[in-house]
Image 1 (cartoon, rainbow, N blue to C red):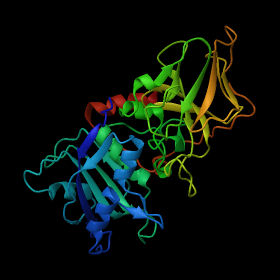
Image 2: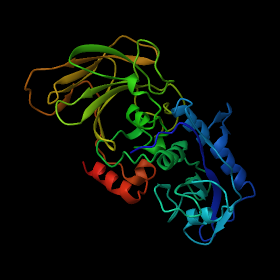
Image 3: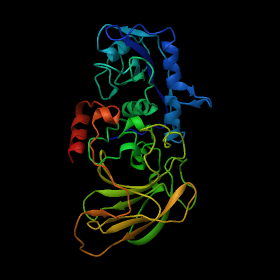
Image 4: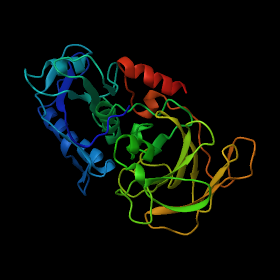
Amino acid sequence: MTVPWQGSTRIAIVPVWNDRVDQSPGSDFRDQATARVFYDPQGSEGNDDSLQNYVWTVSYGQASLSGAVFPVVRSSGSDVTGAAMDSLPPGHGYTHLLAVLPHGSGPDRSSWAWWDASPRNGITAFARVSLFQNSALTMRQPAGIWGMETLHMVTEFGDLYNVSPNLGRYDVMANAFASSHPSAHTKLAMGWISPSSVVRHGTGTQSYVLHAIGLRQPPPPGRVSAVRIPARSGTRSFIAEARLAVDKYERSDNLGDGIPDEGVIVYEIASLLNVKLRAVLDAGQRYSNDDEGFSVSVSSTAVPGGRRISIIEPRTSGAKGSGKRSRHSRRIWTRRLTPMSAGCCSKRWGKRAETLKRSAAD
């Protein structure tokens, strides 16, 4: 069960370093942590690369962070998050904590998130991120890693990279290095897209105008956020949504960030965390699934800020065979993302562990 994130969530921000791994950080360590969380203008245009801006943007202004940045903590062991929690003063009133390390290089340094933990100094959910990826402090840790870990911690939504082919760079919960928007599936779970904006397709042929997920929602009249296509049997379904490079998070400015291609993505949902990418379609392309008896085609007519699609159902009754792409649609790579290549990982506690393990095994 995912916890929707609406409004402001109070998070204790604690800069922490390990004296067995890190050199003593500079006097501006706390200031750097504050900037990365709340306001961090970068480049000649001063684009805000903060965690706050990422959360606010991908939630369409529905979610935000508040809280204090506490004094720098020195840890004499690998349990930097434990040291951060223990450093909070009595009566601090926080249940969520974000530990900020100088860098993520070396043992016990990866980005993580925990929830449903036994309280430790009042904290029951916490995450660990770093200012930089490398010990030389020259490679900034992507905003998507900060976003993924914070979303884990606050919403209790798990990882999407444990299946293949997963959504990859089309969902930050599948590949944090991309720093892209979550998919419509994930945003529904987090409460940022209304279920009424995701139309359920019935039978026959219908046309829809998809409003790009990276644009503000709800969509304008005559458009939908996504279309859900129920499977013929069971609880599975398919979703079609438009992904366009409409903002800094969807745009690919550097190798490996943003969405890999613009177009309409079609993915299959077996459970909350079992989500598989089936096709990426450009204008004039079609995805056909003979087992489920439907096809999705993308119109060649340009639509500003979106894509027009047609869903045809049913196809030939009783057709056999696996789902197929047209020969013109893009290949979907099936390489399994490991926790390292996906950008991070999350740890589950208590009854959530059994639920999420079952989902990953589906």
